[in-house]
Image (cartoon, rainbow, N blue to C red; front, side, top):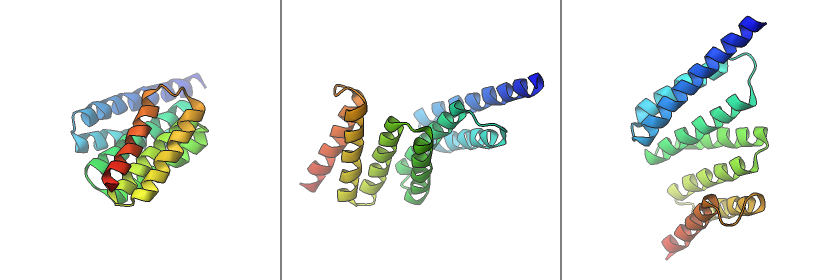
Length: 156
């Protein structure tokens, strides 16, 4: 039992290391390297026999970054697949802020697809969740207002 625990801890440390490498590549706009590290981390997560909430959260964050990379590269089909996974994990984690963040990314996707009214709806739903869960004077709330304002500006 103790041996299995130490193996799980070693795998978890390896996963976190791969995630951090992916994050650094993501921040440096080395998208293919980031996706490679993220894929390796996800493969490691999939071999862990008992998934912890921490690993589920990590998986969520990997999918967020992967979706944003796909949006940056205008690979909207892949981005859409990641959005579905993000929303599923947000619901599994029962985390309203993560659900709001998934709506923001879904709105970004819809905006790139030129579905502005659907994007606006996603951004408004995200804002409502954020206002319900966190303080009005918060960067995440401000980002929602910015996204909504951008839609109205683009509509002219």
